[in-house]
Structure formats: C-alpha cells, structure tokens
Image (cartoon, rainbow, N blue to C red):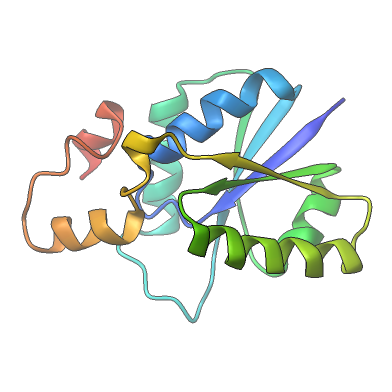
Length: 153
C-alpha cells in the first residue's frame, strides 16, 4: 500500500492545501493529513478544532486519514508506515526551505521520499498565516478556505 503523509499546521486549512491533497490522492492508496503540534508556535485554532474542520472538508473520504502528531515528521511517517511525504510549493522561497528539510530528512530516514507538488498560480499567494491575520481582524476569508470550513470560523 502506498501511503503518503501531508504534514502541516492547517491552522486553518486553505483552498491551496485542499488543492494539493486532491492532486496527490490519485498517486497514493492513502493520504494521511498530519496536523503537526508545535508547542513553540502559537496557534489560532485548537488541534481538536482543526481536526474537526478537516473531517468536515474531507467528509469521510476512505483514502484520507486525519491525525495529529508531535515530534519529527519523519518519525511520524515511520509510525504510519508512510513511504512518502507530500509538500506543497508556492514560491522559490518555499522550495529552498522545503529542499533543505527534505535533504535532512533523507539523511535521517532515506526510505521516505519527499514529493513536491507545485501550487497552482491562483493559489500561490494563499497561506494559513495570511488567513489567520484576516480572521484576527474580522475579515472575510471565504475566498481562501474550503466552504466546509466556514461554519467553524
């Protein structure tokens, strides 16, 4: 079984995240969306709320599993028996950052392959950070998040 992990904070999930997952799904038997819990990073939504939103967005799709995790992402891959890690790339800066992490991960766990999926141009400016800022200032984020997420925000 080809299992891929798509890790992130998903605080909140955006339409750019959703697009990456939808494009990755035909490539794998299962895609695990891993909500990484990083205690040093302040969050907007609780892990439980993020998980609830993701369940609503993916509506029980049998190829999608949603999990939270702490620690190294490559260790979580091993726990899941995931052979692949999916990373979305929006820009050259994202690529440089993700390339460095992928190379370090390859030294630690060479059996896990990182797959980069380029963001569609229309989604390249969308990030959870920007969406959180809009939410904190009572702005309308409906153009940037899946419609299923709006009832939670």
